[in-house]
Image 1: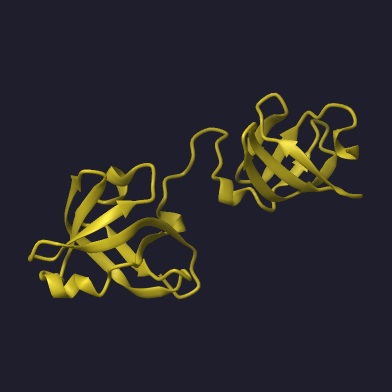
Image 2 (image 1 turned 180 degrees about the horizontal axis):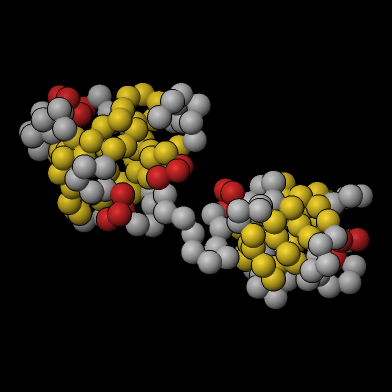
Length: 176
């Protein structure tokens, strides 16, 4: 992965565990069992998201309470993983599985075109917010920005390859 490539943080490296190079990892992904598998390659990044080292290949992985214990090929001692304490594990964004059907990853939504069923352009998604009532998209329209609740009743179709959302909006929503 080149410097500047998009990375997704999947875990926080904690302190070493034992004497044989195992390291405690707090998972920051919904599916750690799919990410923390022997043979997988992970990058170590700092708090700013800059690469520190990598890729590291997982040689051993197992669940341990709320964390995971990982060992990396070529780092078979406690001292070899102590320097990694407090950093994060990341994977290239392309490594994640493609969403199914009309699903989309939230970080992909920025830049999606918003259109009505007739194909009329209503704006571009410029951000999103997770509010108590659900996910809301910030859309920059032709005259002003508006907030669009990301609900099936309003968002009729997600065209991920075409980066478009087809929406059926109530009258006046873009004027608020």
